[in-house]
Every structure is written in C-alpha cells, then in structure tokens.
Length: 264
View 1 (cartoon, rainbow, N blue to C red):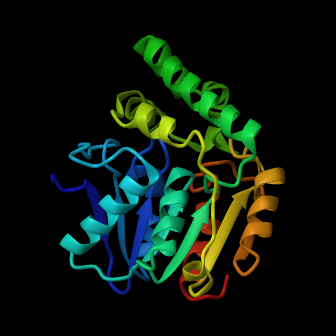
View 2: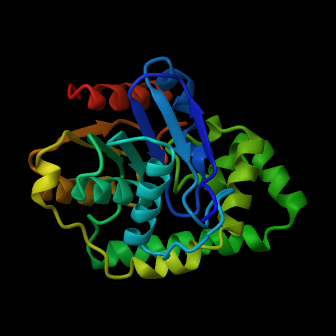
C-alpha cells in the first residue's frame, strides 16, 4: 500500500487530524501552527482524497479507519489523540470505538443525522462536486477572487467564507472534483448511523459543532450527538460553519488543545 500523504509538525504527544468527504489535509491549515506549538501534529489525506492514492483500501468508514490504523503503525505512532471533521469525525469516532486512540475530538461528525438530513447532505456535496466540474476556470477564478464570490460559492460550508483566500478556494474545489473515492465513500454512507460502545466511554470525547453549520445542521444533529454521547464534552462554536477552522482558528485550536488535556 502506498503511504498516505500527510503534513507533520511540532513535537510532543501526537495529534492526528482527519479531513472530511472530498476534502484534504489542508483544511486544518489555519490551526496547524498553534497546535504544533504544543503537540506533534499529523494532518493526513485519507486514501482516495487529496494526494493519497486509493491503494487497496475499501471505500467505506471501516476501510478508511483501518487505513489510518495501518498508517499509524507504519509511522510508529501508538494510541494518539485524534480529531476529525465531518467524515473524518466519523473515522475518529470509529478509531475510538476500536480502542486505537487516547482521545477523540469530532467537529460536526457524520452519523448523527436523521434520514432526511443524510439524504440532503449527500445531495448537497454531490451537487457541489458537479458544479466544480462544470464551472469554467476563468469564472471560478473570478468568483474566488472576491469576498462576494467566495460567499456565494461556500456559504453552505463556512460561516465566514469571505475570510478565505482565493487560492485556497481553487485548490479545495480541485481536491473535491478530483477525489477518486468521493462517489464510493459517499454511497457507502447511505445507511450509516452512529452507534456508541463502551470503548468511547473510557476515553475523553469532545464533540464540537458550529452554529452556522448548514450541511450537518447544528440544531438537530448536535442535539442527537448529546443524546447518544451523554458522557462526552459538547462544545458550541458560535458563528462557525461545517468547516470551522478558517472561521475561527483560535477557538478551534483551543477546543482541540483543551480536549487533549480533558479540560474542554
């Protein structure tokens, strides 16, 4: 199996960061420097996303979690802290269920949706990918270059999309459009719902949700998360969207560092 693309910074207890469906490790870029002042941080591209080849990984939540476990073993990392966003939050929770990590922090994780929310989120992501494929490059560059254009393109994903820089927007769209595992992983989640087990109750778990999350909606899905994980720490991110790290980097970094220390 080819190695997973990743960014590794800092020193200390390792913290592994896992992106969402159609994303890449760079989604964590706004918080990496602050986290690396306190911990060794490993932000990775899941198989079939970003710069990581699919390899022999099964395109499913279990397959992706297994690929991360194998990556950690090859890197000599044992039971790290792990954080994930969206699909990555689901992978992080699965690693916690397997007893493979010391703590879990999940930002807007999958699995806490009802049937309508699951269908809508999959359709929105699919439509976004289709738009990215059809959008002529000159038009995409013009939209990404203006705050109004970034807001029009990305308000479903970010609470403050105007804060993004143009090149990041273009690179993220290219990553979404080019991800070979997007369709099969999306389809594998058609019936997925979160199920807790005793292993998660034995480690610190933090669930963070942005109040402007319009993809996995804050009001309903964070409420289900609180009901299904009553022993976890639940954090609200005011003004943040589904991808909160660029919306409020300092707050997200504080949540991650506090979660590692069990103080969130």
